[in-house]
Image (cartoon, rainbow, N blue to C red):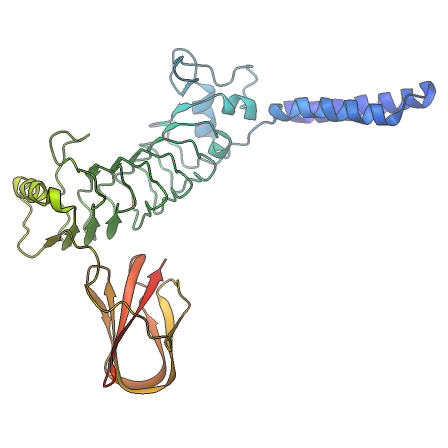
Length: 364
């Protein structure tokens, strides 16, 4: 019988004994209830965490002063025995005492249970077989390394304190950095990413993105000086990105960027490198147009108040790259399937004998 079951059983036994005593001694039942609530509250921190992956649990249990897995509070750095009471279980109170967690190379496939380590500032779980991570409760995380796993998605939207992120050698296709204002470093090589946008990361300066064959667009314009090559964490080139066709950077770093690409042997003859990230087309919206739903996942309908003769529809990325085009048609309603496009902001341009208009839409 585990500790939690023992505590609950003991609680009910004590409750029954006290209530029987109340009947004999005329003790006010309100006092008994208040006392039991207090007693029960003291047991809450003894909640045992369920770890479906035995390798994850064993890695935590093996941590002690000689075998690093967990580190206590900073600045008083010390390696600790995570299972502090020695019962071969990890309680919530024990998880809360950990700030740094090292789980590299432990054959872990499932990190369920990590959500109880809410005081983590550093998590390293690289070189495992993890295919998903729930990071939503780890709001204090500053450093994350989940490289060399089996991840196809990585949601970091709750990590507003995140500064350093390493997720190389996975299968990730899209990632959103817009909710990570403190982000400084990101290494994402050997993935399947199609777009990278750091425009909402004012402190960002160090990127590693090699071997992303689907990467077409890169935005590093954030009013901060990027560091290229020497001086970066891994001093690597952005090679292995044959589809990369557009880079938007701050004007004051364009020269350094060009030199870096040249030194890395990356051909730029067919590449657009500019400090202008926005699409230069009319941005006013025709009120009579309705795009529904918006945002969408790539499948949406364009509704007109009446059939427009010879309407020609084109969909552009924020870089001005045409990603969809229709034949001229007369229609009151048009359904567009762009489900293969990466997440981001797009502009739908409609041209007819009456002129050209534009509607902004979001694919998420």
